[in-house]
Length: 215
Ligand code: ADP
Ligand code: MG
Image 1 (cartoon, rainbow, N blue to C red):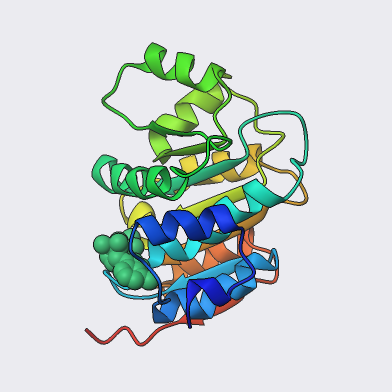
Image 2: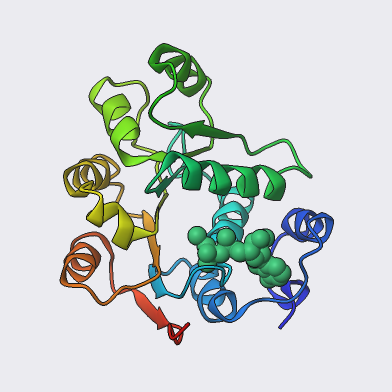
């Protein structure tokens, strides 16, 4: 299936074309149509299968085409287990939003100056990509409001739990409590008890997708 066959905004298609991406990978094919309908999604697929665009395409499409839930920014939080992985997601999000100027993205990770990040957050970015620890710190510090968070995305959920971010994920999920929030969880594996418990807690009637994980 081609991205051009999906009911997505022409600005998203334009960015994908600049990125030279036209055909959906399997995990994208199985998850994006559900995510575009606003459903919660939990998907397990191995590294390199294209999970980043599987959540970024529907997320950016929603931000471009739907009215914000509230006047409060930001609208989406994307969490990754490490600074490096968060940066990779941030770079893809920048590329996917590069053909228009209405969606802004910031990277909020540990190891960077906290007050500089507060300044970035005060500018009301649409999408925050980052690591759970530092984003939880900013929630504690009231650096931004979460009433308008309509998308919460957990990338590599299994690794975030292995790294001990369970409490921070819980804090972020409870703070971003709009009832119309859409939540997506992507992981290499989704069958551990810990991932299952988090899915139960954070996702509503999710579409579950598992791609053959045998490498
Ligand atoms: P994962 O998160 O599942 O490990 P990534 O999202 O990082 O995988 O994608 C792996 C690579 O595949 C990236 O370089 C990305 O640009 C590329 N990619 C993703 N989707 C497609 C696609 N539909 N067509 C071609 N390349 C793609
Ligand atoms: Mg990934």
